[in-house]
Length: 219
Image (cartoon, rainbow, N blue to C red; front, top):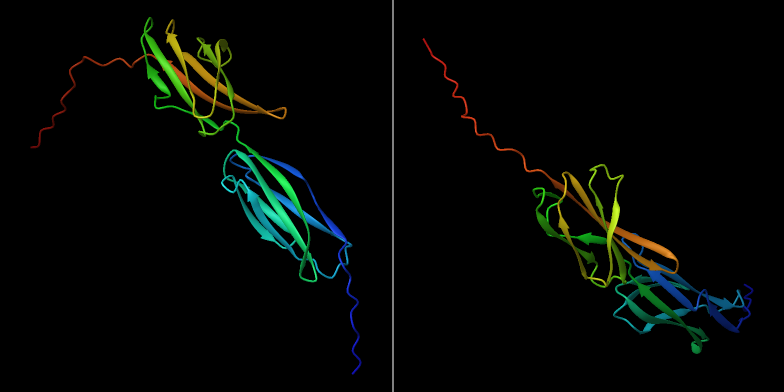
């Protein structure tokens, strides 16, 4: 039996696929991936260990060899560090800075979507940005007195932060009236929107007629 010794190839260094990552945390996106590239590609020791060296309250990591999945937990900054080895000895470390931002996702309210208010009446409409740690949002209120959603006119604009509440005082001039609040968070040139629509309608008339009593005789 002839045995051949495999030549040991020492690693000469490594790099990360990115030194800065931004995760825009939405309902459909909370994760990003980071990879360590060891040089040369045929290095004998390709072990990589991953750790969160700061900001662990903002991010979780799931290591998988030379890759790691980053899962955002909240707005903030974190640092993820990769360490590579050569013959069991720490060779080098590289760190990636991760920024997590959360745009507005929805406008919530405790009020009914359909509201009964008479012509000439007043009502204060309100909506609260969600989640609580959302980015600053520009909120615009629109009113449409045609009831067709085609005639919205801008009536108020204000700025709120995550968890903030926006209000609009409406004097009903005609029925039906549609009122819409639209919140927009902008990050890196992309708009993230949420809206809430209220419909002001006439209260159904209450019948004053005496209900009929239906009787049947059995013979």
